[in-house]
Image (cartoon, rainbow, N blue to C red):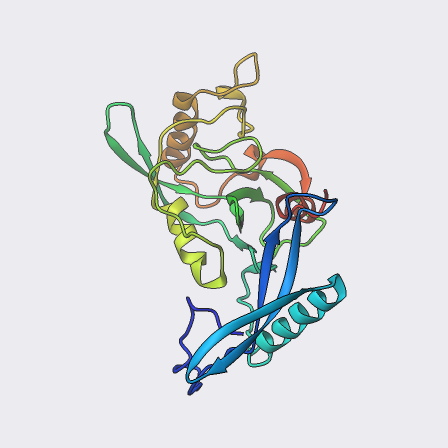
Length: 257
């Protein structure tokens, strides 16, 4: 099965294409079904191809056609070794972890002034999927397991469900193993500007009576880490998200529905 976006017939070593059959999806205006798939033979005469009359395709026949196309499309694929940082990979979902270390964290205030703090980042779990990117915090120094708990990523521009608001930052259109660096750059090399509702940080000095934390208090927390010259993120400041690694993957992939 050829994908036009990936290759041309010539690049696949195909000298020519001869259409034999066509599947047509028909909209039905009356009756109990809304659409009908018909199969049409393609007749060639004097170099001209014409589509013949169609016949309805049963669900079993359609399933056989799709199965054969999928088998043909995967026949020449080669197995690929997963990078050691990848936690899960399911076609339209890629999850990986990034061990915490000291790196720059970029902020931009209301006045447009840019500030870069050299601070220890926590261990993070990235989950890129068709609806965006979610990031969670992790404890420990080992590759996360399915039952390990996840924590709210203590970052600005971050909602209560581990989703990130990127603003004008460009992110890949679809997740893949090759786009992992681009997703990481969107987090590590972009500006944080505001808290995005809820509290994602276990820091008593900045928490108000209502349990929330302001943008200014969040920034003050990271300033305190830089001032203390810590090499590792203090894990006691991670706030539990009441979810496991597997639970987060199920939620984002829709497996729990």
